[in-house]
Length: 335
Image 1: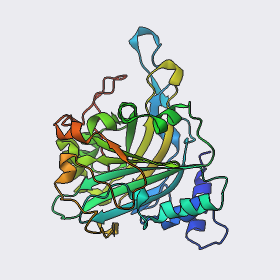
Image 2: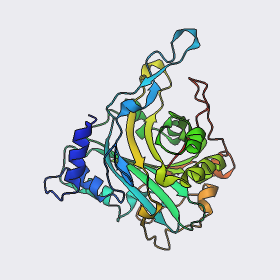
Image 3: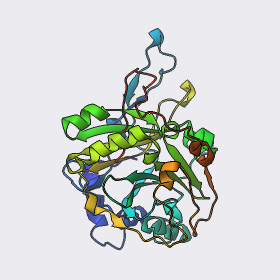
């Protein structure tokens, strides 16, 4: 269930105390390179906003009379639990970070699996890959979410995890909420903006027996890059909530539920941890923009991506997707 504000504060304190009785998720959250902070007062870190801060498709969305398609606050509980955030940089794009031996969040999950921890069932990572203007390094903001119970394979999330890339691209959705920031950023991004990431950007999926990683190449859209670069100019004064979900596309799949949410609070660019890449893992900086992928030497599964389609120029879509239910144009800000 979604913890209360006091629960979050207590867990954050426990994560930083070195206590020996921490859960594997608390261990993982403490191992992430970006620190966990207070939901309301924290800066230069991440927190977990409750789901009911996001307005998603509600019951009756597809059957409402008069053509009205309604949204409502989502359930406060997420489908998955937060397991940490990494803010990383390297000389080349970071793909398939869950397969890396130096990923401390993944290592905490693996240790829990080895000792048969009943709360370590599945790990889902969203890796937002960012090119920062004026900086030679490639950046990644990686959000980790964990299932503490088996995910029913016939559920919407289960079908997303076990489906093919076409299904995932048609369903993977982000909802943004600007909490704090300059007027220009608020006006450009909007609030409660929603976007199907798989249709707007190049997404690469890495699937293992007990994990799924989604690598989202922000540089594959010129408009997404422009909006992001605008926000980066004021990054230390921007606080944004990002909710991730599988889009409901029929009445039977409603109401929509977030599988995870994260608040990034006034993050410092300098907080990014540098990650060394061996020569056989490195790729040219321009490869990320072209949509080409690579398989890291420690990868255990095959990358099923849309590389050829994107390389053929089919992903240059606007990030200003109109939300079909409201007709409002919401821009996506990822940071």
